[in-house]
Amino acid sequence: MTNAACSPCSSEFRSSAFRVLFDDFGTGYASLSYLKKFPLDGLKIDRSFVFGLLVNSDDAAIVGSTIGLSKQLGLTVVAEGIEDKATADFLVSMGCEEGQGYFFGRPMPAEAFDRQFLAAGHTAASAA
Image 1: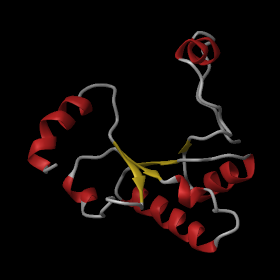
Image 2: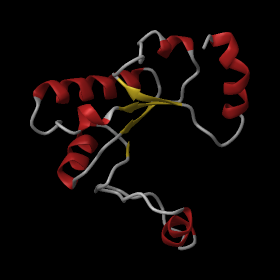
Image 3: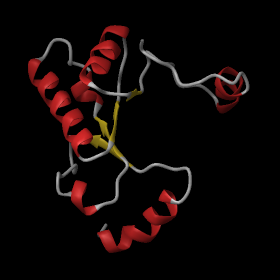
Image 4: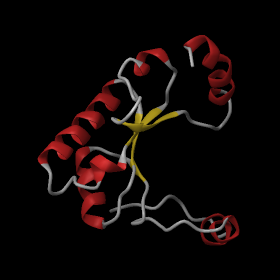
């Protein structure tokens, strides 16, 4: 998709409550040139880097530099695939402010999500 083809859609998203994040950043078609080409709100670090974060120095370097790059570009960063508190805590110490994964909750039907999080007035889960 070209930037011209994407611009009308992204303008509509940006004027609403939606955010546009680059999913699975660091894998596949996730070219760095897209960071300049498309109006993004943030990056989602692929779970393949997050999974080995505590035991693999290469994963830690990639995650750390992606968090730094995101902050320098004024983008939010979301880590995918957080499965335990130690990983969540390490990501927080690296400056990652958002995450998703089984540590925070398993997939559930929409009705259960509404009962557990929306109806009860809960705020976002925290690793701290």
